[in-house]
Length: 342
Ligand SMILES: [Zn+2]
Image (cartoon, rainbow, N blue to C red):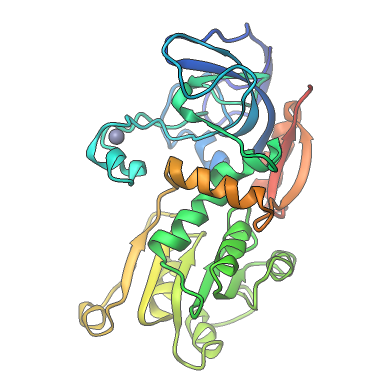
């Protein structure tokens, strides 16, 4: 098979010819038909997530199961599947209580700690394959499994969005943020989109944002947030960028009872005033990816057409490097998508 390989972390992709994978007990092999490309992968490629190289990257995947080994009961040959990309144990207290991204035996990520799907075939534990519902295509299933299920978990479980909420989304024009705008609108919120370019903000408006803030065109982010909410502040602020300065504005721009959620993080510190937290019952927290159940829910709502994949550019999977370069220069609007040979 053809595979796009990172020989050492930090280096560009190299096209290699590899032998087709054979599944071991409990595993299945999928012919890849679609894959997503986003900023998380650019960070993963630097090596900061750990994992061994050489490595085939790629975790947002859709395809068809072509072989299963002994001990597999959840998928069969011919099933169309998406991929859940956390390698969780499935039996610890977090896995069992519906918070599996906090798994205490977490073994890493597809495409970082074992080979992913920027290749003709991908071999994974069968439990990581999730059947695609009728009405959703391979590309939609691929994008569902990070760009959509991540904000789905965040908006419902962490930001706890209600129809009467004003919600600030920082990084609203990014590959995950743009789907976050759709999820927040689906839950009925009034969305204030913040980003760094008119092109990204126009995209956010196209997908439902009610108000926009160009953070490069203003002096004081917090006062802009207050201005757009009649001085009240936002009921939830979700930060896909996660720099200390933007997350500080998220915290400072909260209304009474508001929730500030960091979902894409960068190192640094923010300040909270304990007295203010007590008096206002504000919550400052994080949101980590999604559970398998939430991925199933996400694919179902996408199959109904109420959340749509926003694709900025499609290239053949052997040209994945061009999408990485677009992400590095911040020139990709929405998600990158890879095309495969049938
Ligand atoms: Zn676990």
